[in-house]
Image (spheres, helix red, strand yellow):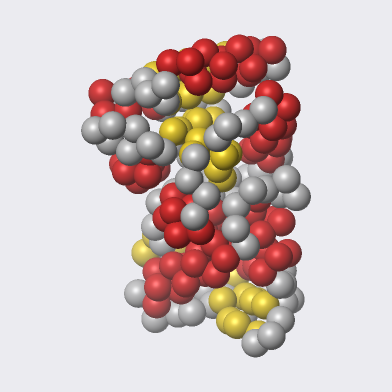
Length: 220
């Protein structure tokens, strides 16, 4: 059983979400006003479902506000399907998105898939790769005394590539590692994540992720 927070201004949608996920024996809390929630209100959950189109404070803005304080998966609920909108949400710290209207099986499957990935065993160790120290338990990356302020998905990409240092992965292979085979995000988000990672690493005068033109990316 997982603790899940659903935030949507449509109370009928919230009722539907709660009924679906309670069938899977999850404990579901619902809120219909994001702007009224404090950081304390969103901590302690295993997953957050967050509507994009809400009055006063939209889901993208709220995600950006809370992302550095919560490390659980955040899934957007959205009627938007434009690539630019989707990329914006994922770059602001979202883990995935579910398109409205959604079916019972889709919501249940996607939520449970993210929960399964989240509960993979942690290594509980540290390792330095190419000068970058990975804390696999806290999911942090350090270079010298500087901590890289990575989003959750940026960290996943760094860890995946660093653990397989020197091996080239296609954008699709990296996507499958980050989102799983049931992911619904766009492959182009991987390019955006890597661009953001490089920018953050450049502040340390290092760019460990190299492009292998026509193939993919590798950690050197």
